Image 1 (tube, rainbow, N blue to C red):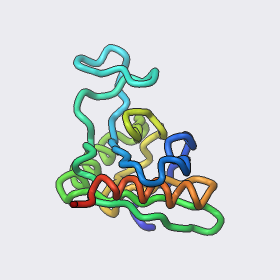
Image 2 (image 1 turned 90 degrees about the horizontal axis):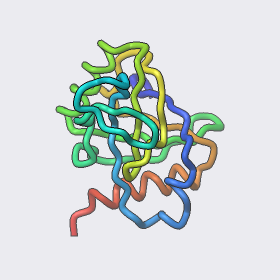
Image 3 (image 1 turned 45 degrees about the vertical axis):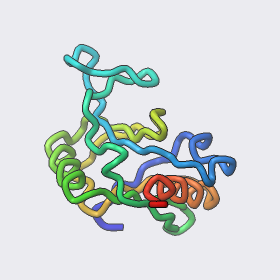
Image 4 (image 1 turned 180 degrees about the vertical axis):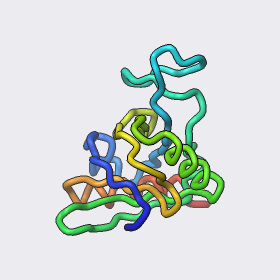
Length: 143
């Protein structure tokens, strides 16, 4: 998918089959220097206090297949997408993290502007991609 980041899905436990129906909260955050003022410590990482994309700004997710890779495409509000694209465009070479339920599941270097078309998380297993997409969407379902 053009404009989407392809990231390695590192935390299989965050998308296990048992969590299929559970609501998963997703956040995208900048990894900052150890002495950055106001930074928060999460799973051994120093993250900016404010996320680049908060969970409430994730508008949906869908599982996609790209060759032999399976992935989840996260979609954001226009404001969050623009913010992520501006940040990643001006911070090439730095790192960002994707958190699932507060746990850093993916940490990756920024290679260029991301976010205009969403953010793609790739992994090995189709069932995990479907489970993560379903559980992110469970947070967006209105009763």
